[in-house]
Image 1 (cartoon, rainbow, N blue to C red):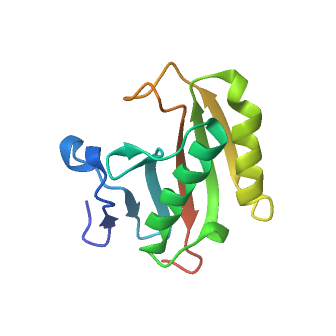
Image 2: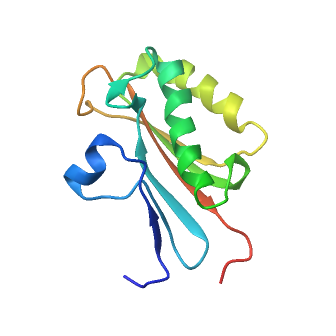
Length: 132
């Protein structure tokens, strides 16, 4: 990859183990944030689907801050859930965080995550206006 690709790490437990970055900024201004869960300092920090969603997006926002971007720069979100019953709680959290931003969004039901107590994982894509 080009030297103009910038990468950041959050120090999450799986980044080093599995060889990935928390976020990557491309020369065209697109910033891709890897899947975020509510794992902080090696522990799941929030309980239910709403709380896990808010925490997961906060972790993604922290990655965006390292590039000087914020919630308002988000153009796409993906929310992965283990249970369809959690759609309303995850959607409520998304609306509270993004109602004024209105990114393209997907909500996908999956069979599970690396830790069975996780019920939500989110991905974020943001765009830096004026990039090459």
